[in-house]
Length: 461
View 1 (cartoon, rainbow, N blue to C red):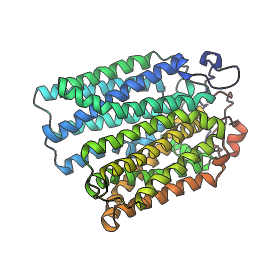
View 2: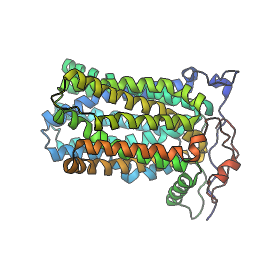
View 3: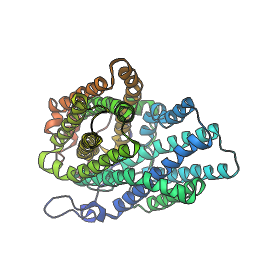
View 4: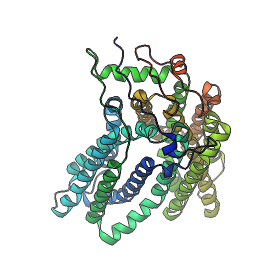
C-alpha cells in the first residue's frame, strides 16, 4: 500500500500565543485567532439554543407533527453522523478546515433563512421542515468535523485544555440561558423574526471565522490507487491501535452508552414517575448548567495538577455517584417536593460537573496526541462510534425501563459508567499527562500505521 501524502503540519508560535515564561499556558482568549474562533462558536451556540425553542413550537403547533413525525425529525439530526461521519472526517484531513467552517456557517444561515420565508408564504410543512433539518444536520457535521482538528493549529499544545475549557464554559452558558432567551424572543418578535435573527447570527459567525489567521497546508497530492476508503481505514487503525487513544476511545464509547440511557429516561422518570412539576424540572436542569460551568472552570487546573489521565478518571468516577444514588434512594411521588428538587438538582449538578472536568482534558489530550494529518479521521472515528452507541442505547433504554423499571435502568447506567472509569484506571491513559512527549518515535510505538509516513512535528503541534 503506498505511503500517505505528507501531513499538513504547522508550527504554532508560542510568542504570538502569549505563553508565559514560566511554561504555564496563558489565557487563550488573548490569542487573536482563538478569540475569533471562540467568539464565532459562542454566538452560534447562543443562537442555536434560542432557535431550538422556536423549532419545538413549529413542530408542535404549526405543522402539528405526529409522534412518529417528531421521531423522524429528531433522527434526521443524527443520521448524517451515522452515514457520513467517517467520510467527512477523512475529508477534513484533505480540505482546508477554516474554509469549511466559513462555508458551513453561510450554508446554515441560508437554510434557516428559508424557514421565515416558508412561514410567511404558508408553505412550511413536515416535509419542507424535514429537508431543512437534514441540511442543517449535514452542515453541522461538516462544521464539527472541521472545528476539532482546526483548534490545535490556533493555540499551543499545552494550551489545548484551557481552550477546550473556555469553549465548554460558553457552551454551557448558552445551553442554560439560550432556551430562556429564545422563549422570550419568540413571544416578543415571533418565530419568523427569530429564525431570521438566527440566520444573521450565523452570518456574523461566518464573518468572524473568515478573519481567523491560520496557516494550513494545501490539499495533499493524490497518491495513485489511493481513495478515501484507504484514509478512513487508516484513521480507524490509527485510533484503535494507539497505546492511549484506544482505551480512551473505548472508555468514551462505554460512557456514551450509559449517557444515552440516563438522557433518554431522566426526564420521563422525573416528570412521570416522580410527578415533579414542569417549573421544578426546569430548575433542576439549570443546576446542570451550573455544574458544567464549574467543571469547565476546574478542568485546566485539575489537568495540570493531576495529569490528563487522572483528571479524566476523576470525571468518569464522579459520574457514577449521582446515578447510583438516584437508583437506590427511596424517593417517590409522595416525597416532599423540596427534597425531590434538592436530590435531583444534585444529580444534575454532579453529573454536569464531572463532564466539565473530563471533557476539556480528554479533548485536549486527544488533540495533542494525534498528528495534524490524522486529527480529522481520529476525531470522526471516535465521534461516529459515539453516535452509533448513543443511537442504540436510546432505543434499548425504553425497553429496559418498561420491562424492569426506571430505577433498574438508571442503576444499570451507573454500572456502565463505572465500567468506563475502570477502562481508564487499568490502562496507560491513567498515567497520561498533557505534557507527554508525543514524538514520532512514541507515535510509531503507540500504533502509528506502518503505511503512514511519520512526520517530523514540532513540540507545539
